[in-house]
Image 1 (cartoon, rainbow, N blue to C red):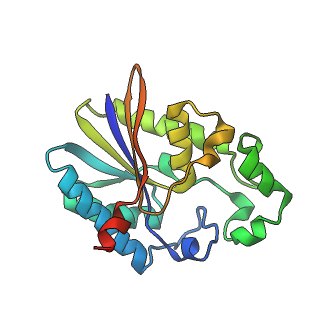
Image 2 (image 1 turned 90 degrees about the vertical axis):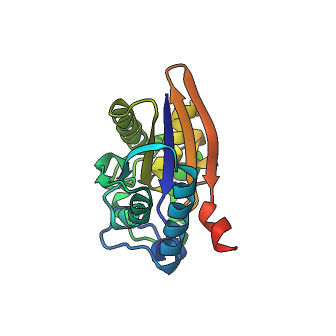
Amino acid sequence: MSLLLLIRHGENDYVKKKRLAGRLPGVHLNDTGRKQAEAVAHSLALRLKKASVKAIYSSPLERTMETAEPIAEALDVEIIARPGLMETDYGDWQGKTLKDLGRRKLWKVVQNNPSLMRFPGGESFAETQNRISQEIEALRAEHTEKQVIICVSHSDPIKLAVGYYLGLPLDFFQRLTIAPASISTLLINNSGTRLLNLNTDISLTLMNH
């Protein structure tokens, strides 16, 4: 049995301006994103006080590592960068606004038939799903049943991972929503998977009190 926490990175200016960051370097958390990361760290420190956490696993991009830092400090564990948790490779679409991309014919494929989508110069959603599910399985193999696995990643990879473990058809994964700094939790064992929570926005709750 594995308890898996999937955390999306906090807000950055690309998210704020509705621009697709992808794997572009130099995309950092903004002030809101840093506050979100601190709030998530505070919440997890309280909730996981008696849990066994070996490390925080993060996509190596700046915005995910910066989200992982306060969590790792709060739980007194190290951060281990895992390329398998990386954002989808959007290829030529990186850096473009969602408004611009929404005018393209392929946008309907992204939203309605993502199983058929390969980003120009990048990867397909199927490849992203295969990559992150293999990464999670590799992490599960490295942990005991009593250890909590915490992964900091990105919206589409997290949605694709949840979809995979719930047995959703790939074309349905866009029906899920993963907000910045949200937590989604899966309980995985050999007999199946349970979704304990999806897209829980702890940071927003704490920031408003």
